[in-house]
Length: 95
Image (cartoon, rainbow, N blue to C red; front, side):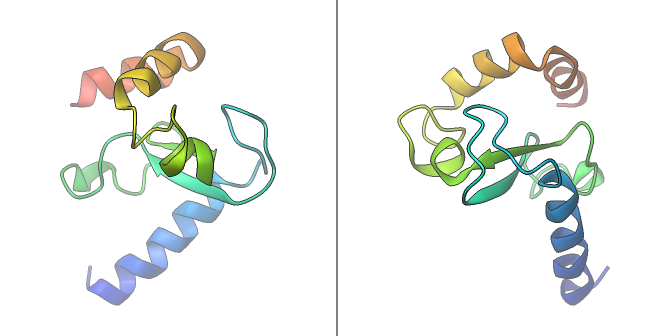
């Protein structure tokens, strides 16, 4: 897949992950992002897996908040284990 095709596929993936229209952590409906549970740079085979490798987060819960997936991955992993057990187990199995 060339870079242009990857960008197009990423946009489709992101739209699908965000389709429910709310942050999975705080229920915000503003500034939604699609977050890869397994980093797309290192797990190319799961890059476009929507159901298990994607989660909809607002920008605060994704990148900028004290308890965000990027700023506090330990907290986020624990939240995922407690609240999205099936996805958490999938991540562990596929790391």
